[in-house]
Structures are given as C-alpha cells and as structure tokens.
Amino acid sequence: MPTVISITEKRDLEWRIKLMLCEGLHCDADEIDPGYRLKADLDMEGDRAARFFKDYGNEFHVDLTELWANWFFYFRRERIELSKGTRLAMAVAASAGLLEWAMFPHFSALMGFVTVFGIFIVIFAAVKIALRMSPPPEKPGMQEITVAQLVQAAKDGKWSVPEEIREWVSKHEPSRPLI
Image (cartoon, rainbow, N blue to C red):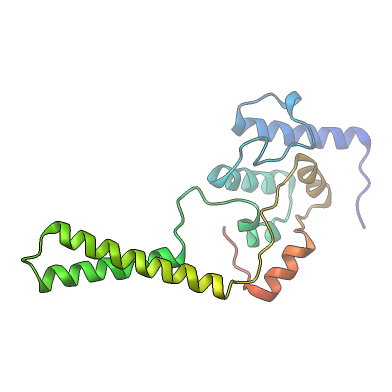
C-alpha cells in the first residue's frame, strides 16, 4: 500500500532531489522544473548519471535494481563504443596486415596500408549488408527520466521501468546489471 505523503512533505522531497541534482550540475534548485529531463535539459550522461543514481538510491532509499538492469535504455556510456561488425573488421584487417608484413616484408608500407584498409572496408560492408538483410529485433528507444519521475520513485521506494522495456528484455536479453 502506498504511503500517504502530505503536500509539504512532497515539496520537501522534491526540493531535496532538486538540491541533489544541483550539486553535480552547478545550478540553482529554483530553476529546475519537475518536467525537466535529466539528459536533454540537465545534460546528465554516463559516469555523472551513474554517480547521481548511486547517491540518489542511498539518500532516498530507492530500490534501483530495475534501473541498473536496464541502464542502457536510459544512458549511454561516455566511452566510444564500436559495433561488433567494426571490431570484427578491424581484427581481421589487422591480422591480415601482420600476416602480409611477415610473409612479404619487401612490400612498401603504403601497399600494406592499402591492403589492410581494403580488407577492412570489404568486411565492414559485408557485415552492414548482412545486418540489413536480417535486422535484429527493434529495441525500444532511449528513455528520458524527468525530475517528477525521481520524486515519484522516491515516494514509492522503487524504480519501475516502462512495460515495453520489461517485455523486450524478457524476450531478447538476459538481465545484466551495469553496476
């Protein structure tokens, strides 16, 4: 059964969450509206978002298990991520380049570069074509988290992901928490 929170307690909870947001973002809590989105409006992403949610969960005693398990629907990592096809093409091209260098040491560096680059392009294109011919199941889009959702989760004591994400994950991917 949900707990009943008075209007003053609700405002206090909202104010505390806004203050917590402003600590990392260097802004004024009065400027933050409940409809503000963490990524689009407050520019929260990657490591900063992970730190905020660790502190938020501890401070307001919110169970964030579902959020951590589905983190990639809300935030991207800060590092550059290469697709599996790109990594495969790079690995094969680099291997071919080393093999060419070992077998034909008299070839020029330019010839080696052209060969490696050509192999990379061919494999990369083949992977892209294969993905177009049999695309993976459509994944729900990136989700935005609003200040109002933070307040609601603090009241409920638990973070809940949308049903469309829960269904997609149950059908396509094993649950693996980020943190």
